[in-house]
Length: 480
Ligand SMILES: Cc1cc2nc3c(=O)[nH]c(=O)nc-3n(C[C@H](O)[C@H](O)[C@H](O)COP(=O)(O)OP(=O)(O)OC[C@H]3O[C@@H](n4cnc5c(N)ncnc54)[C@H](O)[C@@H]3O)c2cc1C
Image (cartoon, rainbow, N blue to C red; front, top):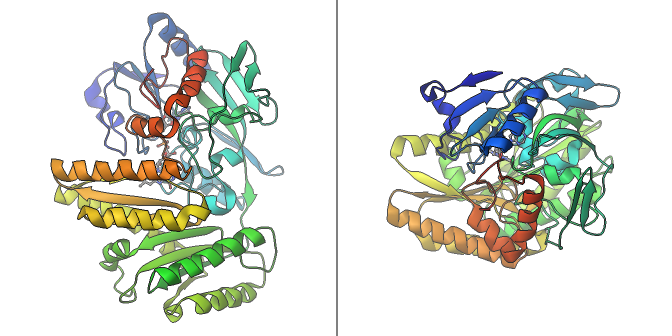
């Protein structure tokens, strides 16, 4: 292992993508599980806080310590593929793009795809990360088969999906025997707090636990074959009616046809609002004029691509007056261009923030699709009333949008925060989630409290049972 104590040599490890700044006594880059066990056992004796860190692309401060020991996973980056069974064992420090580059050579892929491809697989599991393809393939949780974890106590746990099922609201394995009361778990994309419900698989408790229960040092993931061909479409809308007509029909058809050959079914449905497109227009002057919004879709195809294209254009022409402006991607290069178009948005936002002394708050709420129209109207009514600059984009297929509100002074920050809190309360009222993918970490704890109220004690009970001295991921999820 490598131990660093001179902070000037690792300043960049003390900040994540949310700009949460921290501190620590030392940074340790571990190389095997025995080192982790030793560190954890010693920390329990000395009551030292430990924070686990992946690639620091997190947006909640969860990988940043306020004190104690910071452990980086970056040297644990092995990757062993079992091509016949379409599975892979990976070290937590392997980055998402590194895994997919290796898999691509075998015509395989790992379906969940967080936009930030430099994130680590350990971080993806610990935050139950999602991406645009979550519309079809679910979140990281759905693709994790086995985990090897060093629990906060220093105990080494190898857990396989299907091995421990929670019965009678009781988590029972090894020396653990923890009863919990029912906690509401939204049946949508959800990454806020522990996954906790009767009948669940125990492995799911650790997925999304934000470095608070144990150190994931090895993971077995399920993979899929890459499809022969891919259709990409960017569709433009004149107004909200066109947008919703197209969205609802596309979503319903896609879900109905997920398993059907020969029928249209999107693997992703992503949204860009008017303000997002205004930013993108600086780089893409070919965007049509006077557009309300756009949707990017992708469909995987095994054969007879013309049949799918015909059906897609029938649907687009039926719903969109700008149908003849639709952008199409069929070749690898064209798909890369579409991905660049999508990535240009956060890139531009971050560049603007850096150059113009502007800051932002970013929302991550989601609701069930039956409530989405109301949620959408509420979101825009509140945003427009702020009189601040904003953009809205994201995973509209999952009824999950990110609003970025920009502020330049204390007064604007206060207004932006008030808006966020109102949105959280409205979302919770619709039985939605306060975080669909980014998690809670250190900066969104008050929102988890708004979602769960006194039921948060059930999650705290789990934490205390696994981590009696509260050494791990201190300050994440809730105060205890
Ligand atoms: C531009 C941008 C776009 C993004 N888009 C998405 C998106 O589309 N979807 C999405 O879900 N997220 C997105 N994110 C957020 C972020 O990329 C994800 O949360 C990602 O999963 C974090 O991975 P990481 O390796 O950077 O983890 P870190 O930020 O280093 O850590 C995150 C959490 O995981 C824990 N952790 C890390 N490794 C382990 C381990 N081995 N064992 C136990 N705990 C561990 C840490 O303690 C911490 O609590 C985006 C971020 C940025 C900056």
